[in-house]
Image 1 (tube, rainbow over the protein chains, first blue to last red):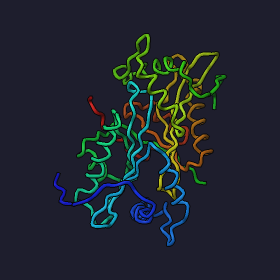
Image 2 (image 1 turned 180 degrees about the vertical axis):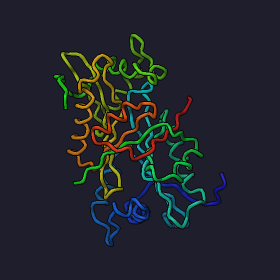
Image 3 (image 1 turned 180 degrees about the horizontal axis):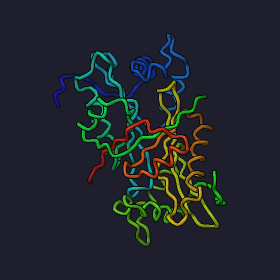
Image 4 (image 1 turned 45 degrees about the horizontal axis):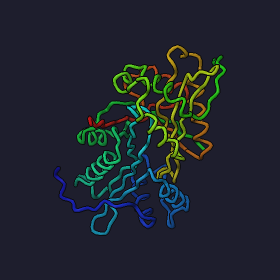
Length: 157
Length: 157
């Protein structure tokens, strides 16, 4: 761990949504998928309300000097397999482009892994797009194995 | 669709847990992970209670002539990305070994994809172990793309 950042990881609030969407959109995949408008479309706040009501979902941000510089969503999913173990699913990990390579992503992911362990998970899983080769190296460095194939079906409407 | 099966897909009940665990254990990966004992360890029923209380999780079974011959778990996950789209996550898809190649798995997955669509999901995702080459071909045939890398970290204790 070579991070020199002084960040705080805390639950995301409604006021963080624009900063989170800006990070999600700042990306070769996200650019085409998000609507980074001012004001931000209400559908993002509606989604924030939905996930805030879900006790199994934790959306957190990394804050540095009052600025939101990273985000991560962790879902804790009960299930029968692996002797009834819950699983953690990590999604939407992003770090602001000008704050990368400072250990912020690592702190976020380590937080999620620790939280999943604390909630009794035996497994944490994630899907990362096959073009995100840097992300795959990053997760391998944090102890994740390239054990699975991630498959998706996306609906056009 | 060449299925000739006459199956019913319905929510799993507590009495289905032994049949589900038997399917999860009947597998080169599951054999080492599950405890297929009689009576079944209580931890499986505890997990069933947890997932039954979760409004975002649907554990279903395929029933054929009164026998449970397949299972699938679908999680509907709210999130901010892709314009606040919810995502469906499919897990623990199994068909009894003597009832394969009859379209039962396809019916289960098509049910889950339809259910995710009906719940407003724009995306359905899943992880399948890299050794399950047949499963990958199966999902590709149903319209899934091999778009992501699935990474996991498993805790030993």
